[in-house]
Amino acid sequence: IYISVKPLITVITMKDINMDLEKIYEKKSEFIKDASAFDIGSVPKKLVPRKEIREIFESVVDFMRLRVARNLLILGGHGGGKTTFAKYLLEEVERVSQKNNNKIFRQYVNCRDAITPESVIGAILNDTKEESTQTALQNKYKDYWDFFISTLVRDLILVLDEVDELDDPDSLLYSLSRISEIQKKTDKKVSLI
Image (cartoon, rainbow, N blue to C red; front, side, top):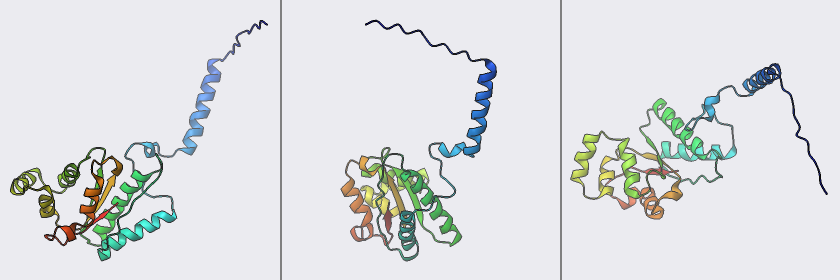
């Protein structure tokens, strides 16, 4: 059997293209008010309410007000908004802390960039101390945990994103969650998310 297929040719004029492009442009602008929301690292000013968010907020407030650390694990599929939520949460912690004069430190660490316990601690310290102070303190302390404890001057809410990328997650997570019990040199607490 032999079948001959003739190519289908559609003639489109420039007027048709311009009309369609303009219609599509207008339609898109009706639905997307702020395209920057799609940028990597964009953090919304407001979140869509969900039951889980309230539970997480309650746990964080317990830590901020009562110093009761409930370590949280946020699970979900790729692109589900875990990182965006975590960054939003830390911004809210900062806002509420400043408003209520609550001296709590907050930190976000992406464990794809910091895969060892030392590099996670280093990432935290990079945002808490001036470089000259860090170097002086680091020379004084042989152990990175002692160094970290010496710089921990207030309670810490620590978000470890992509925690499954850590080389030794059990050791780091245990040590951070029990820092005041293990390291008797501090009364400061760490809440892990």
